[in-house]
Image 1 (cartoon, one colour):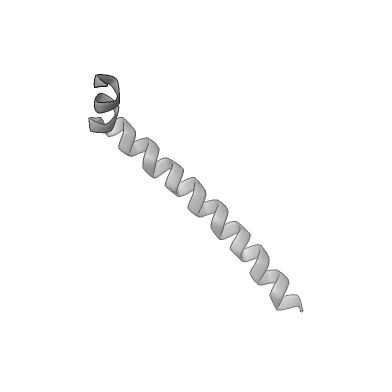
Image 2 (tube, rainbow, N blue to C red):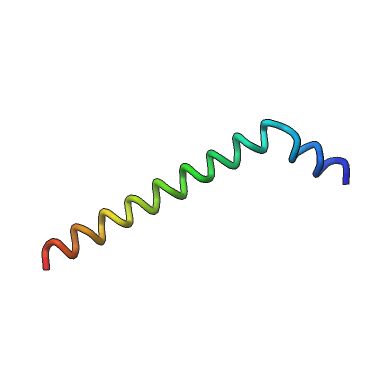
Length: 42
């Protein structure tokens, strides 16, 4: 499909990919800090 190839070749796809990666990593870090605080209290 040419549309898929256009999306993959575009920089737009790269921007979305990094944006999702940043959001996931931020959520993961927030959860990690919550668990770390929880274990520190024990």
